[in-house]
Amino acid sequence: MFKALLACGFLAAAFHSYSVGEIRSAFNGNPVADLSAYQPLLVKDWRDRLTVSLEQGAANEFISLQERLALRAPLDPLAFEVALVQAIEMGEETGAENLARDVISRQPRSLSARLFLLSRAAQTESYGDVLLHFERLAVLRSVDQTALVDAIVGVFRAGEDWTLLLRYVRQGRPLSKELIRDLMSEPVQTVEIEPLVADDRRLQSDYLRRLLRESGHDQAYAAWLRFRRSADPVGEAPFNNKFLPNEAALPYNWFVDSKHAEIQTSGGLYVTYRGVERPLIARQYFSAPSGAYQLVAEARGRMPESGGSLEWSVSCAEPKTSLAIMAVELNKRGEMERFETEVTIPMEDCDFQVIELWGRSGAFPKTSRTEFLSILLDPQTE
View (cartoon, rainbow, N blue to C red):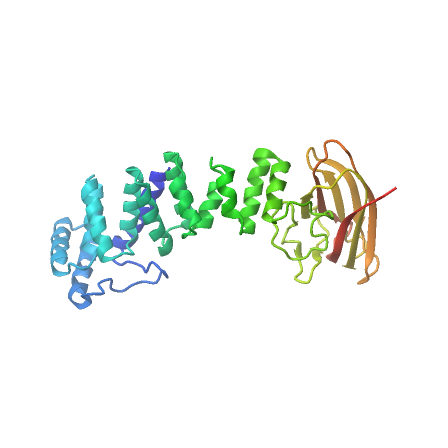
């Protein structure tokens, strides 16, 4: 898969460079009228004729022009790039590698030469060179970076040794975050991954999802507490019950579907619901001790009668067992309203819970706008 990916990338680059007769700037994608920065006036006519002969399939004239161009303009990379393609087609790997280095010495931004050297380094298991050429290509931004990252991870997967790649990402080199995200699904020990994601909320969330799959909530929640640099329980449940902007990771912070809601900069969850279907609007996993609670929400806004409403649900996380459902139907336009219901968390099979906000379709759907100022599980003492 990796070889096919690089081959496609190389052929696409070669086609783009040689059949059209020009190279595009590696940084901004704009056409470069003349690549020969050193001898533009001397070389331009030769380059144009070379392109025409290539497009017309005049092989003999093309080879002759190529050789003359190399002699007349030794600093121009075009003749060497064409020779590189020919060497690859003839299976002359060593010659092609030398030609690719000649191209790089004349044009460090040559996409085709970099791709070939990267492919060659992968084939010979020269992993240091793999990362060298990968970094250059990452800086050029001329290749689909997602595909490039997938390919590099594939190289190290085949080699079954992640040492050099982990060192690369620890140094914060180009595309490190994208590499870390791919490494989440690889057999890299979590002890190696966790320090790499400590300062990035999205990467933390990806990492916690992996821990959930592999080890369950206990291990994932312990890691989440480490990211918060706190060994103590969070306290009130759910976390961030006033919906303040913060950088804590999912799933122990609020997931909010941006199509329906947003956390406001001053706090509060603002929900716009059209009154149709039953969308999941917000969700959070948390851990509260067993016992009796009062689920309390404060909200205000505008909710047309029979136009649709909202509901909060609380369940045990695994297995998912419903504990309470609380409907939210605003009756006082713009005024604060309070909603409450009882919740009892059992002692067994409910170490972690999940709270979710859902839309409830209306008989005559209309758009409602609701602002939740808080949602809290208030412990009830006897």
